[in-house]
Image (cartoon, rainbow, N blue to C red):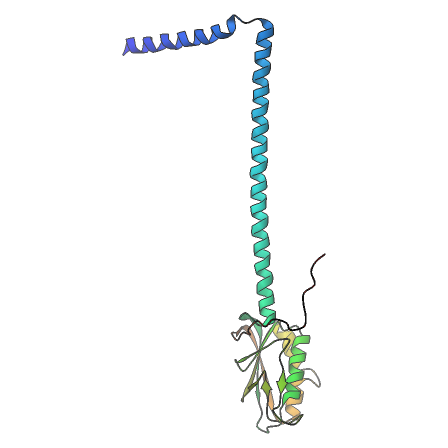
Length: 222
């Protein structure tokens, strides 16, 4: 083992000596050129490393930007889906239960209720767990204008008790319906009764199909 170690040391020394002899016979000008060449090579290597690091940072930034753009697009799609009624929604809000023993409550009262809720910031509205109220929602009484006792929403006739679910700030929504001359008073005057319940969680499951606009087209960005 000792001889092997000594032999390895001898070979290493010889190689080192030979390496040193490579430059030992060079003139000073040649050594300066060699040194300059090594420095240039080192500088090129550093430049390559900088470029690779910049390219890596650019790729990471592009990936982060792409992920951020995708996340924002998803958030916008979810928000538009709730407002357009194409997605289920949940959140705080109110539930209004309306009974009409007199049969005098009709679309006039419900139109006022929907308008008051929208003005109060309702983000999603559902009637009788069956009809999602959106911008295109239409109310009809099925007969002569103002005919009481029949409420038809988007082609579906609602049965009693009428139930209105709305997502938004519970206090604001409840106050909007219960103001002087508002929906609750109109129901009372018609011989019915409206009970408002503030809820921490309102679940609206009814959704609408996406319908392409017939007349409107989006404006392209310039």
